[in-house]
Image 1 (tube, rainbow, N blue to C red):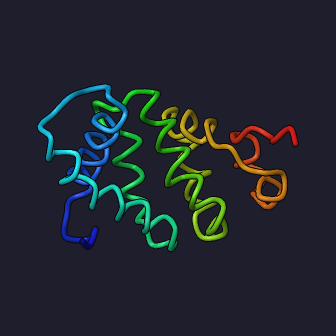
Image 2 (image 1 turned 180 degrees about the horizontal axis):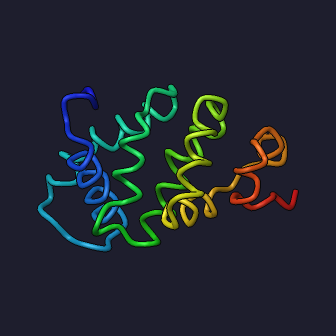
Length: 134
């Protein structure tokens, strides 16, 4: 599956629904979770490879049905992944979005990094992402 042909809002809705079903927040048809897995995997793989478009993250974080719990899930998943493996590529965009938008700041405040990773972040992101205790 390729992220590009699908609109960002459709990707975000599928990722949200996958999260809802996999956590038991909502129920669905037995095959629905399996059908949504490729979208979730593709978003996670794109975060891992550093090819996740910032627009997909925007759609996830701004999803009209996304809760603080869902944004924490996004923080612990694709956002943490891009910050641990591709911070140099995404840091400026993420910091700018945090300055402009409360949901972005809330999401990044739920990110957990180790001290080495956190120290490599620009000051703007270190003001939003909590400093690790160890």
